[in-house]
Length: 131
Ligand code: TYD
Image (cartoon, rainbow, N blue to C red; front, side, top):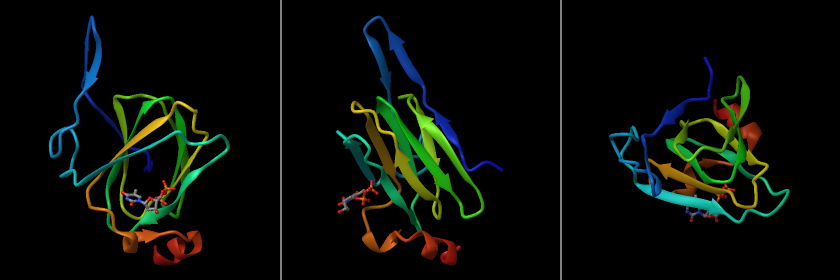
C-alpha cells in the first residue's frame, strides 16, 4: 500500500477567485491543535529530515511548489505538492524530507498536537531502530 494519501478539499470558485476552508474533524480528519507555515525557503535548502512518534499532519502547498519524500522504513516515495486544494496526510512514524522549494512556496501544515520537541526523531538510523 502506498504511503501517499491525498485529501482533496472543496474549492469554492467564483468570478472573484478561489477559497478553500479547512475544518477540524470535518474535511481534516483530526482536531487541529496547531497550524504552521514554511515560506521564503532559500534556494537549494531542504527541510524536515525527521519523523514523529505521535503526530498526524496535513501539508498543503498554498503557493508555489515543493517535493516531499515520505518513508515508512520499508519504502520511500516522493510527490510534488503544488495544489492549494490537496493535502498530503502524514501519519506518525513516517520520515519526511522536503526538497526543491520554489521561492514562492508557502507550505501550510496542520497538526494534531501542539509542538513537542520530545516527539521528534531526527536521526534516520534511530527512526529505523524505533520502527
Ligand atoms: P523544524 O521542525 O526543525 O523544521 P523543519 O523540520 O521543517 O526543518 O523546526 C524549526 C524550528 O522551529 C525548531 O527550532 C523548532 C521550531 N518549531 C516550533 O517552535 N514550533 C513548531 O510548531 C515547529 C514545527 C517548529
